[in-house]
Length: 333
Length: 291
Image 1 (cartoon, each protein chain N blue to C red):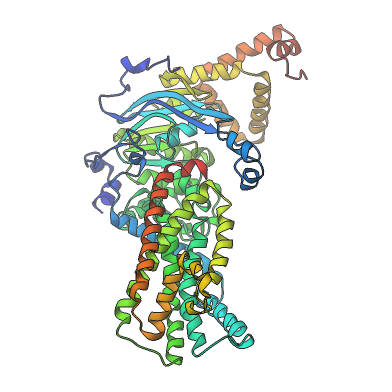
Image 2 (image 1 turned 90 degrees about the vertical axis):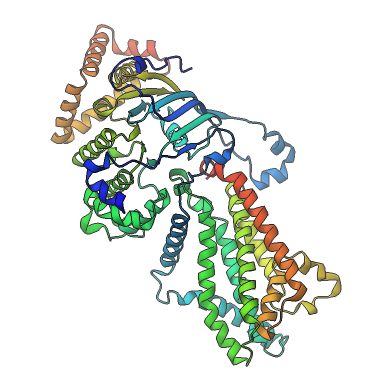
């Protein structure tokens, strides 16, 4: 399924070097879907035959399906894709948190992960103690962490709050501390899931800049993100996932364009709700409007695609166009 | 330390060689999935200590009596038992209070650890899903925490010993550390086993509760093993904790050497340790997906 092999592998300066930091070969991850009533003692006792029969796989989901990639040392590799396309599962498999059903993951170097909000933070203890426990969890000793703490506190901007229990933190503060810890743990390979979306613009900028510094120092970064602007700005390569398959690997700009094109071409329902959400977000804050305009400028392909779509729809009555595309879609103009 | 200084000076960091170790995550066996060998024993110990003290501190943080609860809990239980059996049923005998306490205190240690361990992986789902660390530290921290709590109750036990004009015996220097070690090993084994299995079979948490309850009465804590009618003796034989309870009481009350009693203690402890660690090793790679 990974027929679109590294098209960029032979061109450009940011292609994988000889040293491979992270290699996945034919990695697949299957999840068994839980069926109601299965696996409990009651049903096992009451219906032993049914319980035995249910041992055979009933419903399954291949969250990641035959993915093979090689990430070179010092690369900034981004993975984009719609929700539920298997990006985060893939990242967890890379991190060694989840065992692939098939295939092989090879990582050379100290892995640090930044997965989801406040990974492993305990709400009732202070930010400082959480930082220490977090460092211990990733394998540092107390002395090493104590030495890094001033830098972490400084970067997160939590100076006067660091000794407060974390339940009092806002979600932005959570992310800031989480990012500061992950970034300061001297990773050789940093895996970042969509987490930065929570912080404010300035902090996001700071994080991306820090990630870019890490990249320049030779740290390998794999990031899952919906922030397409950042993907284009920082990554050296990008991949697009769809329904567990890695459908495209290559130059970030090409991949992002391809992704947007597919998005716009997908259901009109999605498009309409995206439009509404955008409108309300933009009209409610001038800051967002400004940001949106900046993003649009950075993504001329998207703008162009939107304009073409709009033109196409004007030519045919909207109701018909929708119905032709999707029979189930209610055609409310 | 040097690393800490280096990171603040990014110019130097680029020239600091990273410790390079290749870890092969899934090459042949699931063994390779475990955290890289770079993790030092010091780190594991510090992590164990940090998690344990955090949990203990959190448990007593908001309560007025705080740590005193570690003592009040088994003490009040022992006193209730004394009142019910020694006073009301008049089944007690000489030094019955000390007799009870010498059994109840170690039992509370065992029971507390085993009961809490069943939920330790399920309750730390967030950690398992997001961070890679030696999973065994979680059940170990439960055992460690309960051991600390037990050690805190020792002064209460001493009061009972003094009040009953017993000891001190020279033999304690050997018997008490020995029994202590055996109980730690047994508890670690049982906790590793139950914590791992509960991830895949959640009912085990409630089953354990029931079994622990039964086990308390099946163990010679309230009564002497001699009192058990001959045809029910087998219950004590298949009870992993019975020999240990007898050992504790014999040692504390009369400075007894456990004698051949020590053999079943050792066998149960070693058996559970091997079984617990084996089951844990087999299952630990699937925890993150199952919790």
